[in-house]
Image (cartoon, rainbow, N blue to C red; front, top):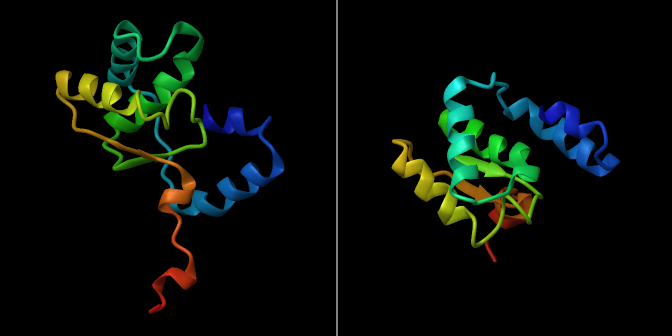
Amino acid sequence: MILDELEDAPSHVRAFFAEIRRHAEATDIAQEAIHLQRAYLAARIVGEQSRADALHVAVATVSRCRVIVSWNFRHVVNFQKIPLYNGVNLANGYGVIGIHTPQEVVVHDHENEDV
């Protein structure tokens, strides 16, 4: 799913993903992720046209990921939607998931220096 989306992504996004992919783990789409995706859609967190975005969040949640890192500010990394995703997660027996931008999670070498 993500690899399909990367085919049309800008070169800097593909390069970034290639760099961080060694830290990522691939997973299959479990049936419980599809049920959670449907719960997000039923809660109107996103509409039908954004079902792939809902599935991304559902797969990460069901896989017990600690954080989603995304540039999708409209449907995923969205101040209003993050608590809604987590509310549906809790209502369906899952924990909360952190959802952040790459800038929020990338640590640069100079940040570890004493200032």
